[in-house]
Length: 373
Image 1 (cartoon, rainbow, N blue to C red):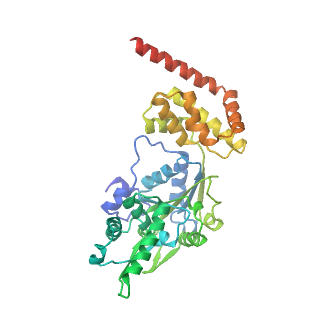
Image 2 (cartoon, rainbow, N blue to C red):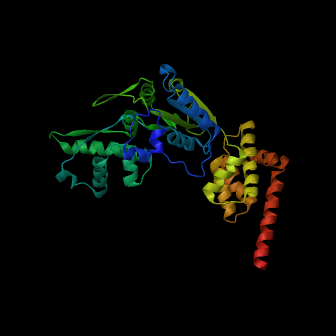
Image 3 (tube, rainbow, N blue to C red):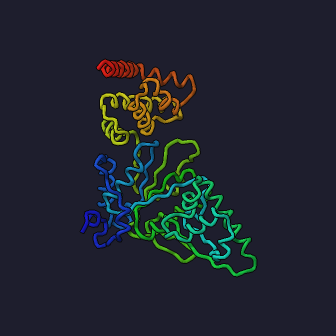
């Protein structure tokens, strides 16, 4: 029996080969966080305690704070197949449960534009794991919002072409339904951007521990191994406060802030391949100071891990640490002159700007030595 099978919350359950491939494998660079230890401990402790079972998790924090990494780590630790759905503003109920699509006869399919043929063929070949929206995104190379709009146009066109003929329809469940029914760990990314309250209500009902989803083909019950991990950014443009009813269905929440400096450095090395820990340490300290300063002064931008990775990568590529600080970090937080002065003053008072200058001097020395040799 494989390791992934023996770490299951339900030891008697056997994963298929395809499901085992969906269980996340932790890379060697993965460092177990306190949040990961805490969540896994709580899930295991309460797994067979009825109403006290913990199966809905909320990870709330800034972009790049490790929310998705943590969700995947839970998949590895608990031995559950991992999948995700990324929410978007115009998401509707068909994106939650799936779509009912007409089966277009082959002769009619051949009359369509090549791009439309490709879409319909991809939809018909779908095994139910991807949502119809994601299939259109992949086939046409378009955004999620464009894909949702395109799908509606395709359905309307198919209805017009059917005329008076009897049309056969087929139901294609979403990946949410598959995860829900098969007992996977599902990451639900950014439900705060959804505009339609009915969509959130559908999620609310599904996330009850004894919940169900009413499909056109019948009612399905929540698999006892199904775990939902909701990941959402804090205070981002376009987001709303998390629906109170949805938050109420969560049994455990983690506030995801920037990780410790040592972990930031480890992740940067893993992401960029840049191994100068002293330089990365200075860059990490600057990110941390900018993050706290932005919060204290109600500056809406974020200094997070993504900015740190891009900045470190630029420095690794030979860019000036001082100059790239603005293009990779500060201007992502704000371009307001007064706010920039506040951020610069915070860095100056912590001695971090002089730290950047020292990095620059040492870099120039090394470059001179290389040229001399």
